[in-house]
Image (tube, rainbow, N blue to C red; front, side, top):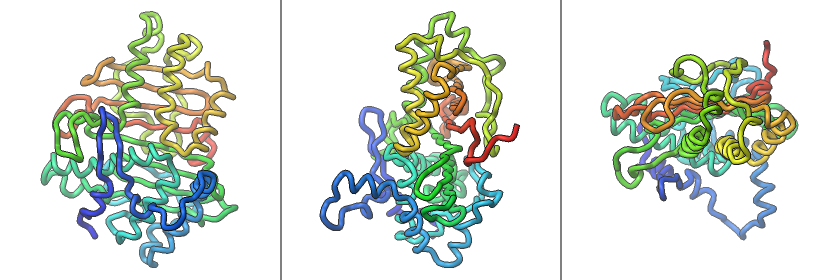
Length: 363
């Protein structure tokens, strides 16, 4: 099970239309209706039930696998996260699962995020195969679409707090649940290398593919719309960063770097800022996204700041931050891709300014 499963790779296959991502779900076969079609209301109710999906995944595991996959809710490993390649991580990797277990695991991931969030996550996993192809022997040990780990913290139950982590290279998705309700979904990290495919690598990896297209292009459209005065306000002090802040830290950075307030933007620019934020919340489950937007509006949309550093065109390093009282988004594209193309390697994250992992921030 340590080798890359060709069946699993096939299940994560990509399609691309007009530069947008469209993926075959990794659990498509498992999700085919086995009886009469359910009504939309029944489907929605079932989709909200993450506890049964977690329990079904756990029933597929043997004792040795369960020991890796399940940790105490209060384990310090729950707040440990990162997105860099690692020899090993917390949890049970897909590489150590049978096909039926992988299907159950991916159904659990799908239950925790939106369809779009799932499609982008599986696309990022699939890109590991491309990195292995580009890097050759240099990436043979690190690049594996199955080197992603599932960890459940505590016991999934209707009235209990429990947690879920899905993590590997360029993905770290962390959830805290109260029964079937996701009460926190941060840190919520996605990244891509290459950010945009500059060459055609075949059907699965067509030229022009951009998994995190909206997260970059919508921001570029916003910054290019700023007047000279607005750009002065939006420009962050200091040099272009080399990475997002507090990468791997249990809590988000508290410092507000600067930027232009939403109240200083035109109506059209405010709409573009909302569109940018929705590029992130659209990857979350609808209920989680709605709750985030409710908190944002209650705290005051006008208080949100948009800050920019670096170039305003592709191929040159750039960074932005969107920060409000309840959340912070950070995006950076400064590293070259695996083929050496400059500024073609994206890291981006959504964090909770009230405290990641449903834990209060200690100031």
